[in-house]
Image 1 (spheres, helix red, strand yellow):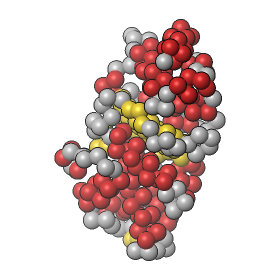
Image 2: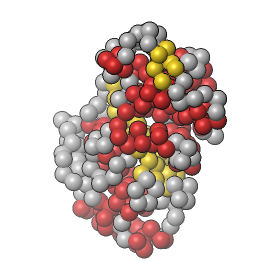
Image 3: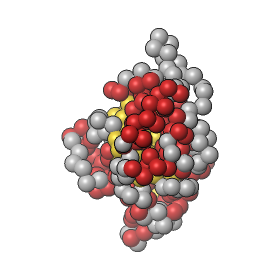
Image 4: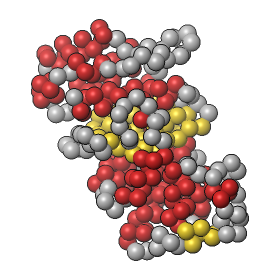
Length: 291
């Protein structure tokens, strides 16, 4: 543990990307605090305490308000999880909800309950401005596989409405998607509001990883959706991620399948700065798992 503590002190002395407390703007300097963590430090403990220590230093060094962010990270080889104290607290999910929504439909396809070519009626434009309405007209039928692709690759809201409406509506979707987690969810989770939490999404990502062969199409769509932003902003990875953004909300949940496998879910209410924060935290994780 002495080695870990010394190395964490070195990280602190090296400094991290800082947020000015007055302007709340984040500098763009490269964040590599974890490069000083040598392999022997990781071998001293398998509980990821060294990694959590560096993330906590990054948060404190940048004076981040921890009530405006939440995270959960899992080593997918060992199953060990580290998370913020508020990881079970619900945040506005934005489009992150589309990941468990699509998983439910891939479950149906893989069980033979429906075909990927199942025709879905484009009954109405629920939210304008998406790609689906540009390529299809109301009254047409669309293959289920295409609705799923548009919902993930383009984060299409009309595609998502078609998917949860065909499950019986929003509350029914939330009821069904609770199966991906062993953690009990509160009434807010099941409400008509769009709430999820990092702890829940950590379980969703573990399910996605454990069944990655059956979710291969979904993972491919996730990897092609946002290859250079959010969790992918400053690592050489192409995370299989689902991001969501809405006003001050910037969230992402994803899998690293290149190198050491891990998952990360970050929810923030920092506006555009949230993308920088999650990118920096993911860089810390990437360096730790792949040093």
